[in-house]
Amino acid sequence: MKVFTIDSASTSEIDDGISLEKFKDSDGMERQRIWVHIADADRWAPRTSQVFDIARRRVTSLYLPQGAIPMLPPK
Image (cartoon, rainbow, N blue to C red; front, top):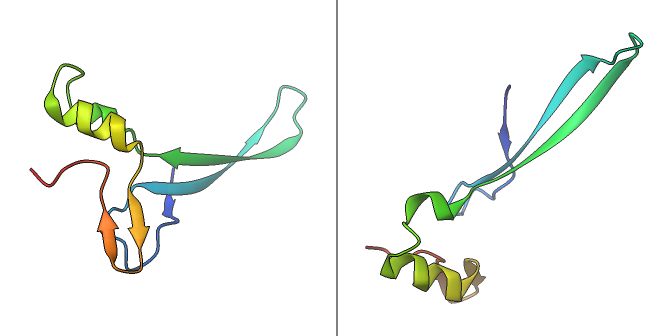
């Protein structure tokens, strides 16, 4: 399945995307399904780690005119 990123060209985190699936249902009708792909940052940090605690408090990355505050710390 081809996935196309929906993040802007200026982002530092390419972690969201969409894809289109064409298939036939059980009646033979052609259908389309849109998939939305969102990265799971939880995969990169064990739940018992300090990184996980920081990411959980931040909830999301913030993009501001002055710069970005990523959900996950740099190190």
